Length: 179
Image 1: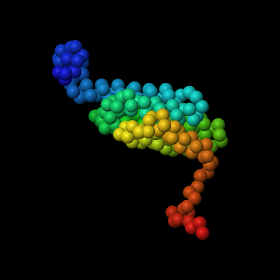
Image 2: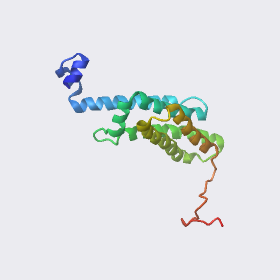
Image 3: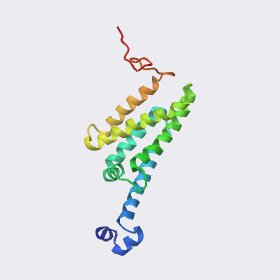
């Protein structure tokens, strides 16, 4: 707290008065990072063609990881008192937005809108888990990673079947022989 006060150019009691202690300061940092990441991702997926939205969302998350590594690590590993993990909180909010957008796209294409939540989970999970991997790897570069994520997600969405079925299983969860 002393170092923070010194860097801020204020006395230590001022920092304690404003934040109430280390936990309050930590909470303020986490809330700021949560708001910044959520706003960045949500804004990035609002406009453009559907594939561009996927690309923009992936690049936005990877850019945040690249430019705000410490903040991202705090979000991924931190947890607010009495709340679910902070990163999962953001992912839930982003998933809700993505699911809403997918429901619109599904309605336009005559697909089952009630499945938009499932696909939203899959898309956000793909991007977020890849970002967690990339946090440590940093190779290939973020644009290459985003292009591959977008390729997988977009081509999966483009080839969606209205009533998908498992190809190698019957209804009794037994493998079907293709002989």
